[in-house]
Image (cartoon, rainbow over all chains, first blue to last red):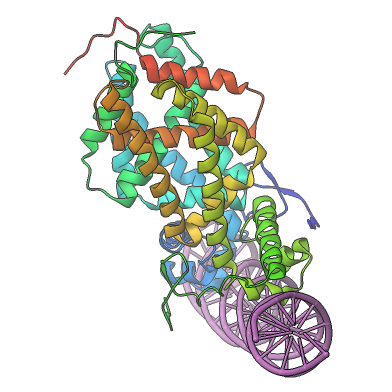
Amino acid sequence: MSSVPCAAVTRSGNVSNASAAPALPKTARGARTRARILKAAEETFGSTGFHRSSIADITRTAGVALGSFYNYFAGKEDVLRELVQHMGRQLRAHLEAETADARDRLQAEEKGLRAFLQYLCANPALYRVLQEAQFVDETIYRDYYQAFGERYLGMLANATGKGEIRPGNNEVRVWALMGMSNFLGMRYALWDQSAAFEDIVAVVSDLLRNGLTTDSSEERT
Amino acid sequence: MSSVPCAAVTRSGNVSNASAAPALPKTARGARTRARILKAAEETFGSTGFHRSSIADITRTAGVALGSFYNYFAGKEDVLRELVQHMGRQLRAHLEAETADARDRLQAEEKGLRAFLQYLCANPALYRVLQEAQFVDETIYRDYYQAFGERYLGMLANATGKGEIRPGNNEVRVWALMGMSNFLGMRYALWDQSAAFEDIVAVVSDLLRNGLTTDSSEERT
DNA sequence: CTGAAACCTGAATCACCATTCATGTTAAAG
DNA sequence: CTTTAACATGAATGGTGATTCAGGTTTCAG
């Protein structure tokens, strides 16, 4: 079922059966070409999907010859890996910038969700590329959320320390929060943008502040 | 880019470019064979993934000849569609049974999440098949969550009427809740089962009851 | 019992596409 | 201005796997 003639370690340190990724370009021209291919891959994977996209589609979009692709990437999986890492860095930087001036954790959650929805609107390929990567090589996907989750966890821990949120299992909370954002983004930023982002943010903010239940509902063990 | 020689309407009513699905089997033998193929598809897609699975893999697992597949399904996409619908019905029935005796909405959420995590543990193929379906034919995926969301929405509306949960935008809440379950299931039922489901349920229950913030955090406009 | 419909079979067909490679072109160090 | 490494090119190769089909077998209604 699995024939692995020669295992190799990629640029990112993962073990893989793909041939090693070519070295980074050494001239300005090379860097430009590589960037164009990466961008074209984002467009193509994002609109057509990973499996339906051929390398030829990518190079045509990039305006380079088919063979040029292999001067920069070991294959289809390799370019996907690079792409997800690149997009992950971009998104994290964006969210960090947008939430930097938050007064407290709750406001950071509001700003973060709003920024995420906007980002997804402007970069719909992110969602598709990431989700499809999951079934090409699960480590790509896990690494993405691992990185995301760790930063998030640190922030919740910090907020707990400051007394902004109640003590609790912040790891589970992080995955719950990431899941919420993910689904709300899919539903309201990608599928149907008829709802105002402010409304969505308000609903989530209310949920994080007060929960769902009425005040009359007493605690029960 | 897209050549659609003959559009057709499938059994499920969706417009598709695939040839129409064969009629349902008319003998007991046929029904048995169809069921075996569907089950084999679940196993194969679930473990190997949709794109890496060949029709030959499925029929080999099912113990039938390659050609038999096309007596029951129009092709790879068609069997995926049938599978997702089948799995969706199963899961909904399971959750409904498990939450039927809940005292109030909050307890129904607890029982529902617990049941979902257990179900996912026992049927890991559900997640993979469903998620991959998204990129084969998005309507398969949307229909699944549409159906799920509508039932869920009705329940929240009912709970709001009874005063069990505060009035609010229940549609957005539904997508937030589905996202939470989805991610928690992926993380704690599929990836790593080291955490006790009870702990996860407790964290979510607490979140839905009290939110994340400390009580001292006053409402701000 | 009997014929027609339903079902089974798997080798052959055929389109698609990832990857390679031999050859030509460009960049830039010395 | 050379010279060489880097880069560009796209036709050719080769493997894969979905789908078809023509001919056999089983079921079952009448």
